[in-house]
Structure formats: C-alpha cells, structure tokens
Image 1: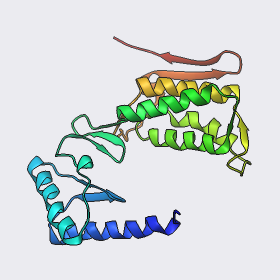
Image 2: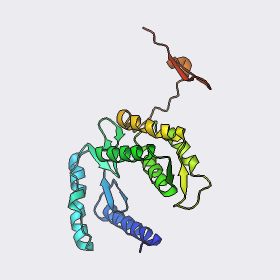
Image 3: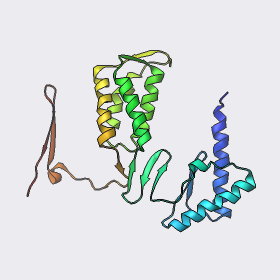
Image 4: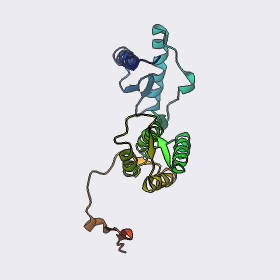
Length: 214
C-alpha cells in the first residue's frame, strides 16, 4: 500500500544526499526532485567532475544508481520531464510528452461525458505542459470550471462544446507553440509602441489588428 509519508521520508533522504555532495564533495550547483539529481555549471569539465563524485558516495551509502537515467554533460537535457536548452535559452516538451498529451486530448475531445478522475488526469498533465507551452493555460480554465462541485472521482462530468473546442485548440499549441523562453522580457510594451490592437464581439468573435511600418 502507498503511504503519504513515504515521499516526505524519501525527500529528507534526498536532501541529506544533496547536503553531503555540497559539503563534502564540493559540488556547488546541484538540485534534486526526489531521486532525480541535476548538476549545473558553465563548464562541461566541472559537470563531469560533479557527475563522477556521485559514484563513490553511492557506494559508501549503498545507493543504487540508475544508469539508464544517467546523462553526460550537455547544453540540451531533459530536466524533470522538460527539455532545457541552455544555448537557445528555452524550455520544450520532449517528443514523448507531446505524443502523450496529444493522445489524451484527442481521446477526451471525442467524448461527451468523462469521470472526474479522467478529467483531472488530463488537466494535471496539460498543466505540466504549460511549463513549456506558453499559450495553453487560458484554455484549461474552462475544463477546471467543469470540475467544481463534483467530489466523487467516479462521478461523470459533461463536456460542453466550448470545452471540447478548447481541447482541440491544444492540438495546435502542442504542434506549433512548443517552447517557452527561460527569461521573459520584464519590460512591458504598450499597444501604442508595438501597434497591436484587439477587440471582442459577442457575434463575430475576436479581431486583431497589427500595424506594420516600413
């Protein structure tokens, strides 16, 4: 049986391992998520040194290492399920995550009713995808609203036509807008500067106007 306290206990152990690496192995830049550890440095040789320091520690503490998850230093790595590119300075979903998200969206968009648990699984995974898909979060709000007032995981939720349309929009986002800059521009430009104007209508939808000057 699963225990809620097991993750907390494992996290304490992982924090202890990180502390040992920092204090006794001179590993300055290290972070972890449960049993996944990542080392960061501006120099490949330093990252390789950090990586090699884990092996003697694992032998002393009797910690098994998963060699399949071990990655050599690179400027593009999958970190906690997100592909991080330190040259382009952006975050992307790896191919397998896009395939999984597309499959979940397609299955859900074809149904009229789903259980609360099924809907929450899709919402949770798409929320994770928002780490790399910048324009996806607004199209989750309608799905989240459908779960309000429903408490039992096996109870059914009716998917409105608007909610299914939002799901289909996610297919476009996953294919065409996979990637988010790590460092967003903190300087806010008004519409007077970039010449972009929008307006909404209850009858004909949304209009966008962009003025380009040569």
